Amino acid sequence: MQAYPLFIGGEWVDAASRQTFTTQNPADTRETVATYASAGPAEVRQAFDAAAAAFPAWSAQTSVARGRILSQASQILATRKAALAQLLTREEGKTLAEATGEVQRAIDIFRFYGGLSYTLGGQTLPHDLPGNFLYTRRDPLGVVALITPWNFPVAIPVWKTAPALLCGNTVVLKPASATPALALEVAKALAEAGLPKGVLNVVTGPGKAFGDEVVTHRSVAAVSFTGSHSVGTQLYTGLAPRMVRAQMEMGGKNPTIVLADADLDLAARLVAIAGFGLTGQACTATSRVIVERSVLDAFTEKLVAKAKAIQVGNGLKEGITMGPAVSESQLKTNLQYIDIATGEGATLVTGGKRLTQGDHAHGWFMEPAILTGVKPGSRLACEEVFGPVVGIIAVDDFEQAITVANEVEFGLSASLVTRDFGRAMRYVDRIQAGVVKVNQISTGLALQAPFGGVKGSSTDSFREQGLAALDFYTRSRTVYLDYSA
Ligand code: ADP
Image (cartoon, rainbow, N blue to C red; front, side, top):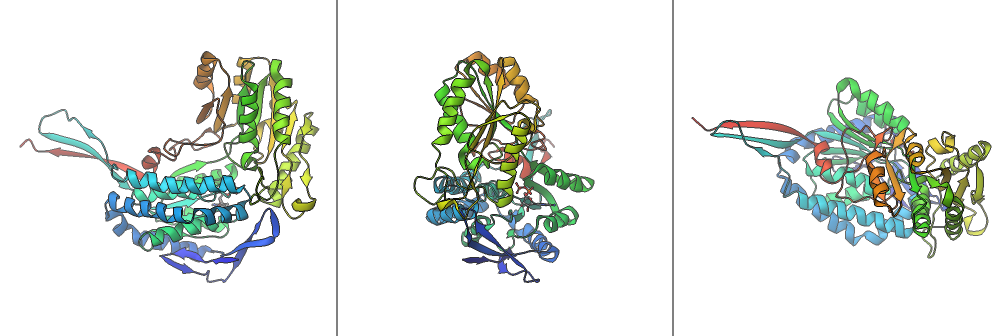
């Protein structure tokens, strides 16, 4: 078992209170994965002070020099890929294949921003008058606070940290308490890559203690948060009086629309991956399938077959295609939503039972669940579950499908399965989602493309990832030079 202290000012330090917490393997809760120091307000303050002290020197380096460290971290992580993927699976529960893909994503994100370091710059513009030079430059913001959820314990910390550092900011990162190991491993790799002390600080511990300090600490220049709608809203309103730049990525209730002309085998495959892959624990997971009534039975039959073929178990084992829920409380939520849905008139057509026998005896396992007859406006049709629970909603036609898809308060990701180009394009025009897919899974993002939601899924101010991240982590200034005299 590993013990991780806090990473503050380039040193590995315990909390003054000596308080710690542990994580358990969700596939076998008898196994403690790691022990962590629990940061209170004093340590959080120290981390922000360390980041503030490191800012002048770090921001004075060229972006190329900073990028070199990111590229080096990418290479260091690549040498540890297999071990980090194992650690990720043991702590979060996703399958080893999923965890390996996520670690590779982190490696690639560092590589991407490392390369981009050669291009970080502004715009030159023609001035109205001759003998004038008009340009913009990108400047770092200062200290940024990054708050990340448990479901992508390495990809999300890295897609926030890498662009923040590239742009010359210093960082305090607070990973989710259920899965902090990978964020600390990233800090280790960055330190080995030559990141100066205090440029990145990682504190583990209760979200509330961290959030309270983020809201009040004068050196916090920006906050990037991914997590629940309730915490995101609370933080955003807390930051508003100081007008701190903030980006909140929150939940989703993502639809996959299946039109009557669709390849139903493809549709079933896409929904099975996007709904049950990662145990449904992705903010872009498909949780609603909106199906034209004429193909409802044929589609449902194919999706049920896919769900039944899923092998639930410990993600480290060969042949397992779906891991456990991350925690007991998440498992309870998943099962509760099945009761809520059947109570509202939906029919459970497959799965939905907790698994407790044999290899499943010590983990938070359940069968992937499919419910039919889900009514638009019912709780399962509107509320995020964050588990392998897919509700099928029947509609009469394309028009109704779009209406139903849009009548939730979220708008993160959506997919449409069809062979009809015209309807696909009309869906692209009208669907209320930040990520719009056609004939693809609703999950899965390109690291080089902007990512974010609309409506209740996001503050919808700045996008994450790709070049869009540079807009969030820098401020633009405009320079007027007159050499006409
Ligand atoms: P999730 O259930 O997806 O992890 P949460 O919103 O509960 O969503 O948590 C997301 C992140 O926000 C975690 O790192 C958590 O510790 C942190 N967090 C929780 N409460 C607060 C708060 N009051 N202020 C700041 N961060 C918080």
